[in-house]
Length: 387
Image (cartoon, helix red, strand yellow):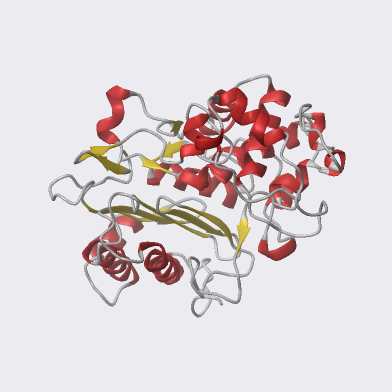
């Protein structure tokens, strides 16, 4: 019997961390925060728990599956696709983090824009505003891109952190220029396929949309498989800031790649550990390169037990991932919160759920280590979850 079988067998014990995760995630369904969720917890080389809870819509009878249900990742696209794709190109020497962004996005011109580097857009210190309503102010992908690249800087370069979708759009275009491929094709070839993320893609073909968790209702009918973000839709569903659909297990595979510092499950060093470390090291205001670092002052989203070295990201549709190299644990929680939520403050409620699940995931990691310790004298575990 494997460790995962042992943990699954006690998942219904409410005092056990696996049972706690089940109960916490299920409470989000019962409270109307989201109709469905998948959660995956694991380490660099194992999956400790994977669960599908609820139903794809508010009607019962269509449960989600961590292996096959596709969720609109929303802003998780920024790290799953864009930051990870840039990581590969930086490791290959095709992109320099401290080169001007205009080296790779030549039409990015204007006052002081020559000072904006690739690192600035990854850390959201470019000086650009947070958002532009491209879906209403432009008519197609060409005019939308022109609107972004000609947008004036609002603050001096490097002077403040302003989380901005525009930064990630620009990073996506840098990938296309440096790789010679469309963003969706490059990240598929360079990241998703090598990691076995076979279900991860920009958008979902019509014939596969039965696997996608609905993101909204149109005249009473669920909509699924199209991008929820309207600005991403303006770019045909492919953008550096949003557009990727994935499963819980595929995001888990990416998380394990980060925990293994660039090594695939087959032992291939896809990128160097030093470059991966650079992308996941804390900078200003709890930002790394594309990633968000754990905020020690708040339990929202990441809880209290993940270590300070932890990094992750969230998405508006109700998605999140947190990765803790210090304790060798990750937690993926994907929901379709935007599917007609019944909770009046679904975003705030989801933040609390994420934090509770993260804490239970750390406790599950500790519990699993103690089980391993029973069968291996060489296994060393801490006395409890590290703060």
